[in-house]
Image 1 (cartoon, helix red, strand yellow):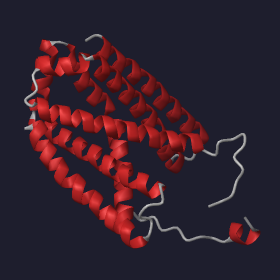
Image 2 (cartoon, each protein chain N blue to C red; image 1 turned 180 degrees about the horizontal axis):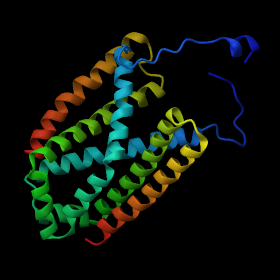
Image 3 (tube, rainbow over the protein chains, first blue to last red; image 1 turned 180 degrees about the vertical axis):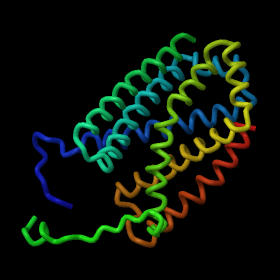
Image 4 (cartoon, rainbow over the protein chains, first blue to last red; image 1 turned 60 degrees about the vertical axis):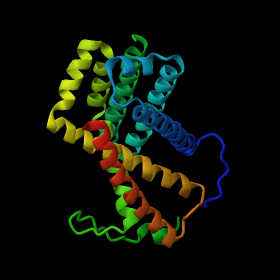
Length: 115
Length: 130
């Protein structure tokens, strides 16, 4: 490992860490949801709606979505950094992904809070 | 970096049809591919989630969409992408913690990712989709 003093610039450490923390949160949520689905099976509209209308589950689901979109942003940005070399094109793609993630967050919030 | 290494011309070998990846490399590129596929399919997945919760009518419409065999196949593919990304991701978390980084265990854990994610896709796919 290279010995660097981390001051000022983050050298990507923050994103690296965020990618992993969001991954752990999503993994835990996934297991909880999978168990809930297997217990609930077969799923009806009422049981499905009740699952997400429940306070803690609604918030946990929203936290999952926030983690998902942040995780997606870091991952997709890494892919663009590897394959898209022209700065202008990369910038445009980055902006598109960020706007998509902001929009998706609104969509997820609307879906959950109109229950 | 010294001048010597800067000037050294490294061979590029990027013929995708010819590249033979070792097992961990194969699992690694699948991690990237599955992530990219999930990203591209996010609008569809969010649409399904939103219509499944909107109202009894939109839930019925959601049921109809999901009953389509082609949609079932796509969802099975996405379930695989999610589970592969999930299992390979857990493997990376352990590698980050310096666990299993030697060649033998890294190969073994890469095999384990496939051995878990593929059957799990079939089992959960049958339970959730059919």
